[in-house]
Image 1 (cartoon, rainbow, N blue to C red):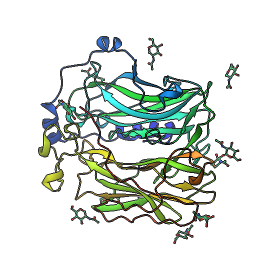
Image 2 (cartoon, rainbow, N blue to C red):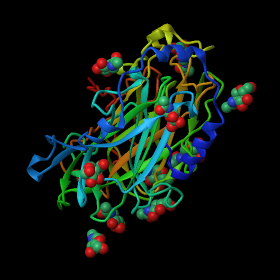
Image 3 (cartoon, protein in one colour):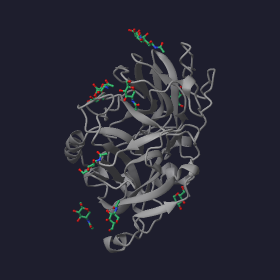
Image 4 (cartoon, rainbow, N blue to C red):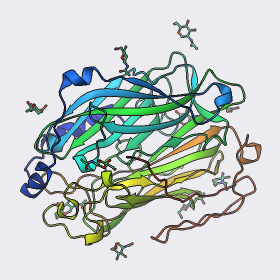
Length: 409
Ligand SMILES: *[C@@H]1O[C@H](CO)[C@@H](O)[C@H](O)[C@H]1NC(C)=O
Ligand SMILES: *[C@@H]1O[C@H](CO)[C@@H](O)[C@H](O)[C@H]1NC(C)=O
Ligand SMILES: *[C@@H]1O[C@H](CO)[C@@H](O)[C@H](O)[C@H]1NC(C)=O
Ligand SMILES: *[C@@H]1O[C@H](CO)[C@@H](O)[C@H](O)[C@H]1NC(C)=O
Ligand SMILES: *[C@@H]1O[C@H](CO)[C@@H](O)[C@H](O)[C@H]1NC(C)=O
Ligand SMILES: *[C@@H]1O[C@H](CO)[C@@H](O)[C@H](O)[C@H]1NC(C)=O
Ligand SMILES: *[C@@H]1O[C@H](CO)[C@@H](O)[C@H](O)[C@H]1NC(C)=O
Ligand SMILES: *[C@@H]1O[C@H](CO)[C@@H](O)[C@H](O)[C@H]1NC(C)=O
Ligand SMILES: *[C@@H]1O[C@H](CO)[C@@H](O)[C@H](O)[C@H]1NC(C)=O
Ligand SMILES: *[C@@H]1O[C@H](CO)[C@@H](O)[C@H](O)[C@H]1NC(C)=O
């Protein structure tokens, strides 16, 4: 996920400089082109679908799935099959509303499922509120980044399944920017439709607290893309951010690329969350050619070959106070999981991001419905990451390290 549009454009240019085709990947991708996509049929797809809301029905909540596109994604010989679009002022289904839940998806124009198993990736998408400043980076980035998704398509569950009366407020006159980068690993162009499902409450019920998004990034405020290191295990740590807002954390989740194992979020040098990557949990996250799909020269255990990140674990508790020092560390182990490569076989750049959502000005003690965990929770990390410690009476931290099962079907 890029943090600014300007940087994104630079990256597109840099992608143009890459380009030699790996014949291995060429052959494997070729057998899996689907018969699809012409823009005429795309024009008939409904762009907004009403769904049944899951949280706060007594507040008149609504859930809507909005389709953006269609986008033609060039084949893997052109810019590594990557294409990027930025749209200013998209429709997110509501204005003057409290958004409680969001999740991105990727489809073909006929509504069928697109993913690594069809050689089409939702590399990342980001939503920006152009009327607000980013809490961490201020005017150094464009707008306030309040939603992001990689191909793992994690739900962003701001109310933690309705247990917090909190959500992200979108004002009547707010302008929302939409960035998407799509990746095609097939030998033919493909056409994709990006979907984002929003659940929201119209208006601003006084009992609901506004959510402040906090974006922490190993690239700081200048870029979200860092070079993969040559070592098979490596890590990157973000700059330290000294909190200038307070709030109760309702939701936090990390984002890394293939080869990554987890994102650790630290507050005053104590781990408050390990967001763990899981790979290949559904057939959509396994290459069409399965274990045969490795780029030339890669060495990796057979069991994880051809598998891609399919979910990141979330955390749902914590407290941020003024002056708290926050940082994240992204961990990679490319001998455990295959790293992403460019079409020429070189290592792709990697990311390490965590998004924290704060119920602004709330403290854990004044929670409006949640039942915070009162003692530490132990991470289920197989990589031995640190558990949680509570460091003060106001700090109530728990970690929910269970994997989110993604029901893609
Ligand atoms: C594939 O996409 C590229 C880049 O947009 C375009 O130049 C080319 O004409 C497309 N090929 C086909 C067969 O549509
Ligand atoms: C959906 O379609 C309507 C009618 O064509 C259009 O006004 C609206 O902008 C579209 N919304 C999106 C999100 O594309
Ligand atoms: C926190 O810092 C950011 C970045 O410098 C700034 O834009 C924002 O206004 C600050 N927030 C408060 C409440 O001071
Ligand atoms: C939104 O813009 C309209 C027209 O400029 C203005 O009348 C209204 O007061 C604005 N609403 C808010 C909440 O700023
Ligand atoms: C990895 O090794 C290559 C070849 O020695 C070198 O050009 C490149 O800069 C190295 N990358 C990093 C991130 O150190
Ligand atoms: C965190 O650790 C660093 C390095 O040891 C130290 O400089 C810093 O003061 C620590 N921060 C806090 C809040 O303890
Ligand atoms: C891709 O995987 C999904 C499930 O994750 C499955 O429903 C779909 O049929 C698969 N598509 C192909 C072309 O194998
Ligand atoms: C974290 O460290 C900062 C700076 O030393 C301090 O102001 C803050 O109270 C500490 N927070 C907690 C929860 O201990
Ligand atoms: C990296 O993964 C390999 C293969 O699973 C494993 O043997 C090794 O211990 C891991 N390294 C670290 C630092 O976790
Ligand atoms: C949080 O408190 C600060 C300082 O009192 C205030 O300026 C700000 O508007 C509050 N934020 C929210 C979302 O209530």
